[in-house]
Image 1 (tube, rainbow, N blue to C red):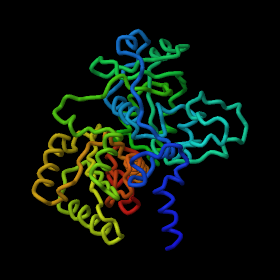
Image 2 (image 1 turned 135 degrees about the vertical axis):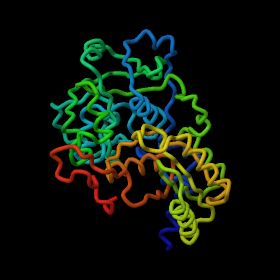
Image 3 (image 1 turned 60 degrees about the vertical axis):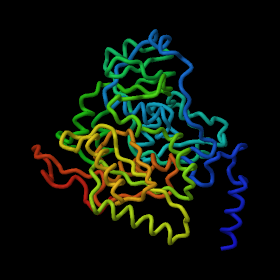
Image 4 (image 1 turned 135 degrees about the horizontal axis):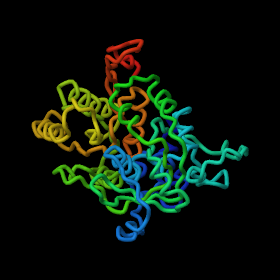
Length: 375
């Protein structure tokens, strides 16, 4: 007990932060992956007019959602679409190497071109942070030919608007079957996200990105799309001493409400004076038979207004697409909320699970893709 009190006092004094300027959100909120020195991503210094002169790559709806996840800081410390080295770390170790304290003398190695001829052991001095899902940008052969040799690329939304610039591009083969098997643990040709992956071009484009402007959808829900930096400010302003997050892609039912209420009670018993609930519905792509986002948001609002959840509940959309990759995806669900300061994360049985399709030649046709208890 004495040791805990000493550590708490040192933390509150900023002694343990390993950064010169202690963020105002510390120690109320936990640090994001990549360390205490994390700063909210800045907008690009390029104007949209200037960016329109660069070679362009057209994004799909899902690509745009990943751009938002990266550009706003949900995927920290990832700063762009994965280069091949980072993708391989993600697929094989569910993590990526970082070096926030420059112990290797090459703190930005994750932002450099993948070098298979570098046999040094310096990266052993780095640290690993959670990164369980591939955040990648497929491109066509025509796009590859157009952007090869260029230093800066403009990413264009499906609407035609330039939304981000990508620098120092790295182009490599999209080994779809390998990526799919590593991510999902199997292949189902009719799995909804696998079908989306198979539509992508034969190459992947990696490189760091910066947003040209805030991403908006103009669907009446943008007021609920708060950035990680805005949410941190909101949590601190609320006086929370712990934030607990609930991920959902469905309407809130009585079981969900009980989980959230009980989590608050448990945190009170643990000694937290003002735990704050963050209801964080998934706002990106979902399969066609899932409930639409606007319906879910309106239902969540009513649930809060009618007192099924605490009155000070913060509801804010999480911009990621849904992958339906079971426990591996749930790590991403949790990591991205932790990046915003959530100390606790609520998940239910069979999270991110899905039924197998009735496609031929499957060992478990029509059954659960994942055991519901494994999540």
